[in-house]
Length: 271
Image (cartoon, rainbow, N blue to C red; front, side):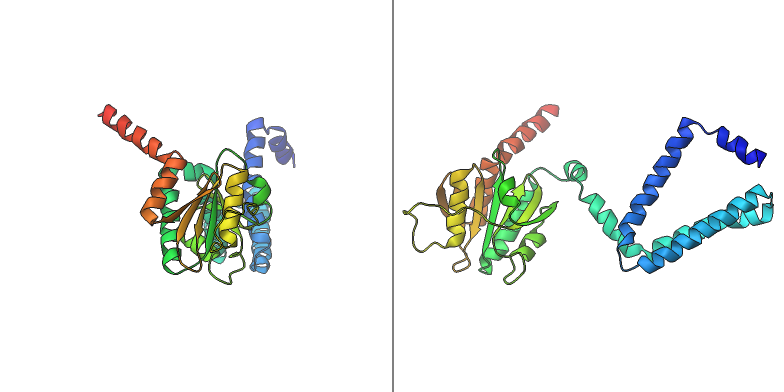
């Protein structure tokens, strides 16, 4: 007992920080796994961990070297079993971590999200899948994003095509993008009040024009009837556009063309 009291009294601030960091790590892991289908297995693993720790602690205090050595070796096996039982949950957690903004900035090439968008638009245009994609610029689109389903994911071609698949839960409404992030889907946009718009254009085109009139957003429209690609900018429609033309427009309007040119000049100067 005196030894235990002596160990507790010798705890330093570094020890406290160390304990808090380990506790925070395990709290994060358990919070990820708590509401999964493996919750029963999680309770079993927690029981095993607590029991093993108590047995190890008692063995150390009682100076039982053989038992202590066994439990020290057992920790490695417990960790391996833990990883195997919850491999799907850990995979999901690592995926979520990989989608954090800091990693997208570090590992994503500038303009790569534009290529993902163009790939998706090209496929949807060829299959006559209707789409409405709004780009946030200086004016915030938060009020419109809040009318839909929050996603906050990296922009990926497959994700865009899945969202706009006919009869999917999110295919109605617009997708809102901010930077290289897909913020929300199934969002409601304001319709244009203009009477000059062609009667051949549907609700998607009216919504795209309405948003581009009220904000500085640019909006891609893919017609469900014809597969035609259009772009709404400052209350006007650019149509029809090929995927290549659309990419040039986006790079110009989003400032990516100038950014790419500056990078080329910088690379040339460095050599």
